Image 1 (cartoon, rainbow, N blue to C red):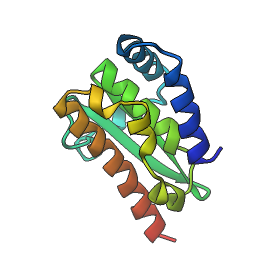
Image 2 (tube, rainbow, N blue to C red; image 1 turned 180 degrees about the vertical axis):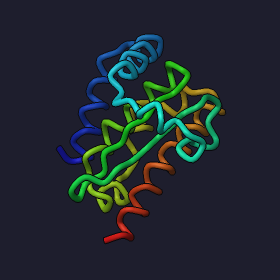
Image 3 (cartoon, helix red, strand yellow; image 1 turned 90 degrees about the vertical axis):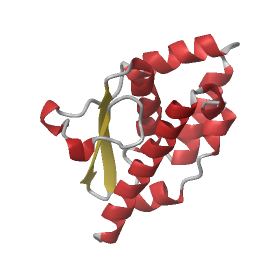
Length: 139
């Protein structure tokens, strides 16, 4: 699936909920299906700087796509990174670099997060794009 299609799917899923409490519960639920990073990869260099909670992210290139794994010590943050991984894992570096992030505003995520969590979200996206840039330059 293309990034845009996955983003539209997420927007549709979020539109089914009437209020933000239900959306938070859904985000937490999504975190339970997160492709988890290996314990031995929970090292400082995989920690995302700028997050209130601990979030580890790792990307590996398989064929010409990047596969992400992650984990967090906070349930809501785990759900947020799970959404991002769903969008960006198994995509090419170029598609990740070129991806628009409008879907985050469409689901209202950033405006319903505390300022520190919103900063963490930006840091997560930045790290994912940095992986894509690094793998793209190694062609």
